[in-house]
Image (tube, rainbow, N blue to C red):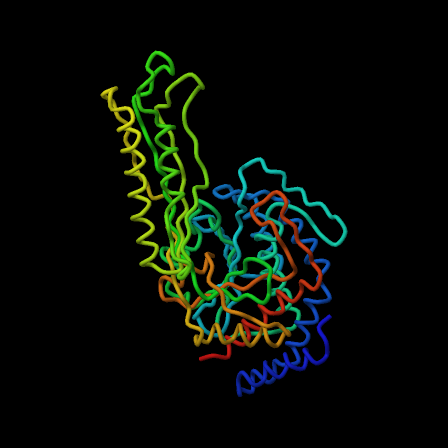
Length: 414
């Protein structure tokens, strides 16, 4: 329960963030909204489970989008639409056309056919995507309900978005369209994404991510009759071995990972084709460029080693490197009013917030120079992107409460 002292801090914050009469008049309504979020926690948890049980693998978010469009209408958002990219949009107009985006992603990091049935064991709920990002989606609905119940108004217009393509090879396609191509892009002045659960974390930096598919092709042949020819599978193995020895700096944190591989046809054939998918990340653009170059060199060495080993066959394998994902790096200054507002909200809620760098939907607006942060949705969770993902809802109402206070704090900034 939000203690009385914390409630008083919330009220004081709502008043002192602005000396305007309108802000002071809204202070009692802030208390009403915060209480609403706490008192309706169980109902919001039920809605979170309902959302999670509608499967939404990346590129197949349509059914969940329909559900969220209905929910946006239910809570009273206006001009609800599903845009060309599959994002669900709903407006809460303010007195200004300048718009703050508040978003959570529709998709889950699982293949089609995954069992999304949620089960409860003790104080934990289990289900793929239950926290990531069904928790974020229900935060959107909860905050709109609370603002409506308390009669809270904002100067900025609020655009609530359930977006596509945050996970995997979605490559941030939802927010890329929203901020770069949509007819609303000129109005979008700042952005808050909701993703994850730990309320002590405020993401203000976007880790740059590039993903590549390396495909090796060769002559193929019979495993016995054509023995001695280079194999695409052998070559890709040499490439992976080269990648595994790459050295990267601890700071700025830079990483690489071979996440998937495949190839060949049958056990008694020399593979004509094999492939890997590689994930490269860094907090620093220069370091990301360097690890990209190192990947290219690792591929060249692996291919050269296989061809040298099988030179007597007079045949060769070759490789193609294809960019399949690009999540740009970015940063929102700690002194930006959006960050200051989020820090104040978290402290008001009794948290000890810290600024983090991660890869989220906020990468995209950050890379365009638009102030953006990612807040967490509340509760506790672990094993994201796993069939063993779990969520503990104890005190999870702190997530939408923190989001609400951040919105209101930021709205007082001119």
